[in-house]
Length: 80
Image (cartoon, rainbow, N blue to C red; front, side):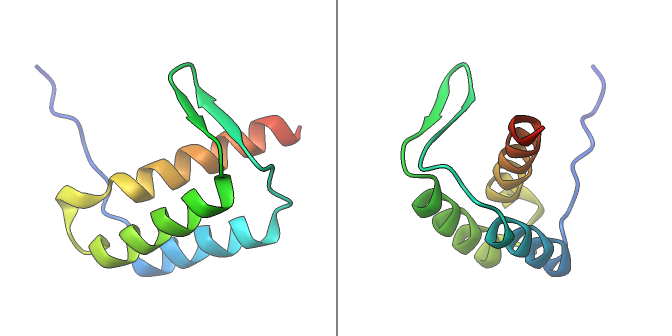
């Protein structure tokens, strides 16, 4: 089985993501994928950023940053 490479995000990358979200006109809610509906996007983003800041240096706790990246990609996709 192939090993999945995981990316360790830097604090600068996290700040860039946070600034990107602040610059966007965000919808109130979003359907991220077939199984993931986020009813309060702004509140969820705030919580994900807080979790990401706390765990930024821990390679096993990159989930919140990964979700921020997925949300950014989804918003970019829907903004086209």
